[in-house]
Length: 226
Image (cartoon, rainbow, N blue to C red; front, top):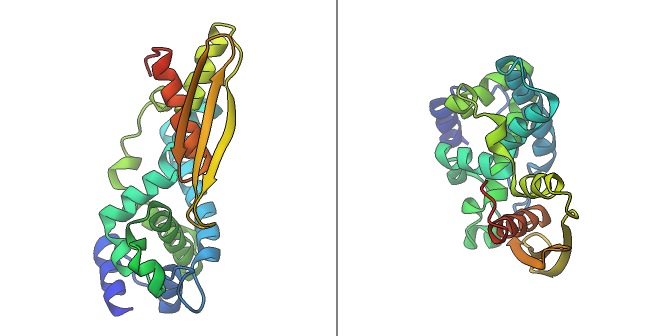
């Protein structure tokens, strides 16, 4: 853990009192012993609270929907995975032999979970203020230069608003296919809009991601500017 501890001090300016918490935060479930799933659960809650407070203070005129949209944008798996990649956390995650061979250190969900687990571990190690500080260090400028919520509509929301404005039926999403092992599945979702004759499909590592891609393709078919 010495190498990981040095990395953490250099990248996020934090030193654990209890280095066992750091080890657990960086241990994937494929490795023997205690893994980071419980810490990820805790870190997810800590992250939501920290980000919610920051955007609440920075956006005093934003309504609840706009605040929720901003928070979702900042804490979604892809955003966390980008942060984790920039920080280099993947080099320090402890895997079982199988997951290591298949490139687990590059997998988006694993990187996001490890970063959240680290936030949870810091919370247990030194309390909320320390966890808030490490979250802010990890996000850097992302928390100081927030985008406008109106620019963050995800494809499903944009499609729904487009159809509602024209009094058209809401889109229907159907599961077409699920493939792969339980921990690494691929979903295929179709999106149809009655009255338009339009049908699109999306593929993703989660049902949500597949639905978003299907909605985005439907928007393209309807020639909607996002």
